[in-house]
Amino acid sequence: MIKLVQKIRDTSNGKVISVAESCTGGMLASYLTSLPGSSAYFSAGIVSYSNEAKIKLLSVSLESLAKYGAVSEVVAKEMALGCKKITSSNIVVSVTGVAGPDGGSLNKPVGMVCFGVVTDSDVKTYTYHLKGDREDVRKEACIIALVIILDLLQN
Image (cartoon, rainbow, N blue to C red):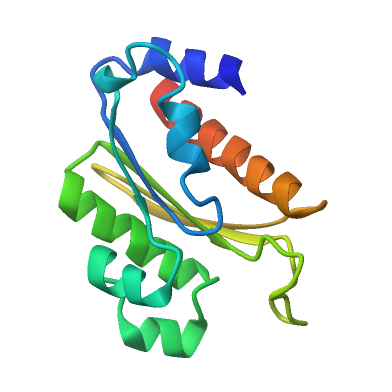
């Protein structure tokens, strides 16, 4: 994990990163700030665990939450866009998912994690189905987010 963060720090080249987290509960921001000098590339981490927080802090629409649920690419996209609006960061990544051990369903099983990615010129979403217990899912989601950030910085 630290090697990924070191690469992000070393390739940020003045670009600023922010994150909007749900299922990772601040873990992603913690990793991004684990090295000295992180203030040069990291602006903010917003933990919006509840739907109410997603609505109030990140401007996620009640309609999207009702229609698609908190664990969806639509909500991940709205989380990232809301964070971008607040921070004006060059790269924003959001994470929302079912970390478990409870809360899963047939359509949204434990380990389903959605990501929203907003840059100055693009918006993308991704869904992954991760394996393991709660901590495994949360850590793997952070690794995926870090890899996404690094890929954006290197391209």
